[in-house]
Image (cartoon, rainbow, N blue to C red; front, side):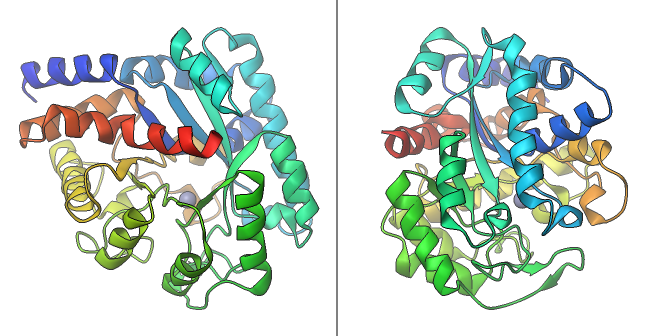
Length: 346
Ligand SMILES: [Zn+2]
């Protein structure tokens, strides 16, 4: 990596908002605190957040299949509590934001904002009053399912088996989309299958996102979006987050140059199809969460193509080296998702 490109990338990250819309932070913090660790974000994440110039992060609330269905509600609420408690002593540098005013304040103060999103509505069960309760806890986004079938949608695979499945939204799924829009929560279609995606396009009235999905044309993985899906999501005003999970991107973490090059190809393709204002970062870095979980299933593989948020600079430098314009990169690293969230939280 040429030093001059890295310095250029650093300057761009410093002068422009940097946003990552998918990290399973609440789950990891909860797991680690259960085992007695404290100050998880401060020790394991904050230095890298600073290094990458991060301004806004979406922490998903992710409940593992082994806690469902009985403990779904319990674990989801406990994750939110654990994250808030872990962030409490750091309020001068990083805090949860729930509305436009809070978002603008943290950006102005140079703090890092954290939005909460449910990765799968399993904790809600079938009771939409619980969705309202999660909204009141600060949750501002949700995916209907994390891959597995539930009361709202079928999802993209049988979790744990990596076996692609079909079938879209249920009647309750359509109802919850309307309820989310009414409450002011954004909808995330990552982890839906093609039928589910089509159903969302049909019933959503507001722009939605695919927070951590890549391009099927670059790597054929059922978590990725076809070109026509990318185009329609963008035409509805949505944004797609580039995923740095090796399995989903289609590369191994080593050698580093090839891993970064693979992410560049996804970013460039997504932008070519969606338009440069409809792509951002949703890295889905999982190594930390994996390390905090019992090693039981594929959920615990370590194949992040970026090892931490400081390495977002390597990606930006590589994109600059491949000819991406500075203003295009500024949108990709955060401007595009920030514009979306300003609307959602408005
Ligand atoms: Zn996910």
